[in-house]
Amino acid sequence: MKNTALSQTHEALGAKMVPFAGYNMPVSYEGINVEHETVRKGVGVFDVSHMGEFLIEGPNALELIQKVSSNDASKLTIGKAQYSCLPNETGGIVDDLIVYRVKEETYLLVVNASNIDKDWLHISKYNKEIGAAMRNISDGFSLLAIQGPKAVEAMQSLTSVDLANIKFYNFVVADFAGIENVIISATGYTGSGGFEIYCKNTEVLQVWDKVFNAGADYGIKPIGLAARDTLRLEMGYCLYGNDIDDSTSPFEAGLGWITKFTKDFVNSETLAKIKAHAPERKLIGFELDERGIPRQGYDIVDGQGNKIGVVTSGTMSPSLGKGIGLGYVPQVFSEIGSQIHIQVRKKAIPATVVKPPFYKA
Image (tube, rainbow, N blue to C red; front, side):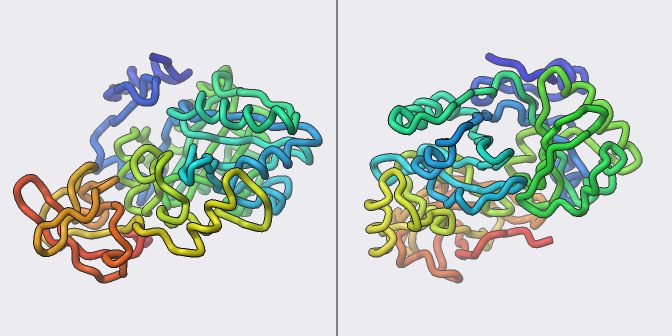
């Protein structure tokens, strides 16, 4: 089990630590609902240093990224980031990721912790002919997500750049918390605004301490992975391993918007056919019409009790006070407003298909 550079800090703060993607991670401090509300209304900090980072460099860097990713990375200018996925050879998804263009011929790929080794092997396979320079820098870097509507105001004193001017999915490499050359990225997994900060492991404790000092007057708190999950689910953001995996196509998962056929990429011909004929099933969002909590793995059934799908992610929404979830169903049940049922133990609870995000600020 690996530790992040801040594991001892989390333990000293009383965090409940759990194994996650091979790391010892804080799942909660005060409780999910309190931490969730902190991010929705104020500012909270997640240690997500378990995420993976790859540097792809050199004159062939863009060619490699274009080959292995679904989105069109040629649209990226320096200082911009892009959500994308790595298609596999059978119509599914190896991983979803964010691509950053750091310099003219330098790109940073940020991948899911549980997929670091798998992604590296997959990209390396296609790089044999292309020959870009690849470096896995995951073990040397930390990542803090400073999220919430008060993040800009709370963090402005720590940097010389105007945080309010960094647009969504843009970033700068600048000074932050007394450290030079920190990536300050206007990205996140919560839907409440804020930044993600990339720095070296040797620097992150200083950054953490200064972030909490700067945010003290704004009620800043450390936030665990449990609240990160409820926050992302309220936005309808996919979680790899739950809502997307090696067997789900981008079009089933509603990720057609990051699948661009303006270029040739891994298995693009098959995915083009899937798009043309519309997939048989679709990832939907739903809200329970009665009291109950949908959980991953629960059956989705029709009005007669016949199984039509499965819940991929589900929770009791702290913001809405009702059960919400995602799941795959046949196209015929995927229309907004359709009535379905979620099998919660022995009871089929009625639910309505809705269009995410569930939470709207």
